[in-house]
Image (cartoon, rainbow, N blue to C red; front, side, top):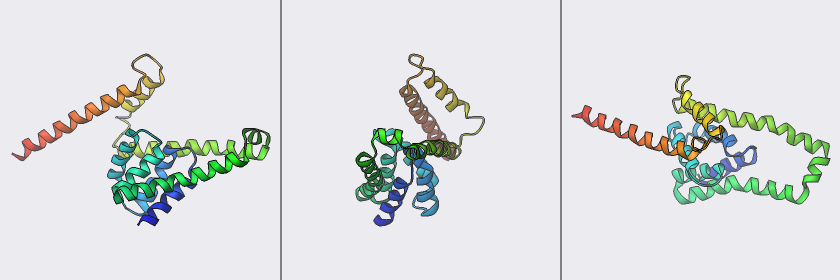
Length: 188
């Protein structure tokens, strides 16, 4: 199990450009769909937990999934699998490709420019997948769209993302409390 976990995240780390958001759909395909190690609902919960943690999303999601599957050893194995490919690639680039080399070498420059549109697609897919899994419909898309516009607006106070994280947490607690209370009343 540890080897499968390590190589799954190693492969994800090796072939994913664009950071954590670009990795989410690949991680979901590998962990939820292919190996069926966790359910789609658990994946969403672990993704939310990883986003709430400080640090790099790709490493955070690997760590929480590894911990969910195999505890501390699983989290270390999954995190190493995610970190190692990036570390080796960055080490290689630092040794052989300087910014001047990238700018002045037409082929290398075109490779990096060609990766850009793919990265955008890799980021958009998990946003759509997560929205579907979260139960966001065209009717409820107004909430995240409004929050995104307000954050982008750069207006004082309303452009602070922490405000919406706190508001979402408070709303989640209230809604969860109400549904538990209603469930207890229905059970009596």
